[in-house]
Length: 102
Image (tube, rainbow, N blue to C red; front, side, top):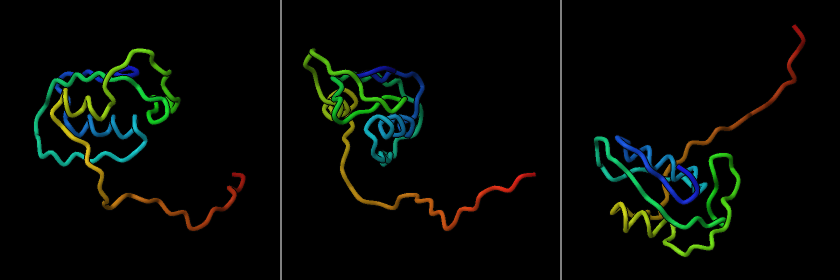
């Protein structure tokens, strides 16, 4: 993996969804119903205004024109990202206390 590339062997679609969640900083949910392992290779031109690296940094701008990550998902993998609403996990902190010395 690197900027503008995902490649893996024997990966699950749910793993791809997790990687896309990190990359796009949005929640991506696998609703394909596809089970099993797949060899996945996808390349695209990174968009520094939208994407993030594994460290949270934005990828460098590219001078090479190419497909967006959304186009690459559809053209190269035959999958499609569809915007929707659904339940999300939320952690609520009711109170915080300073730790006491042992």
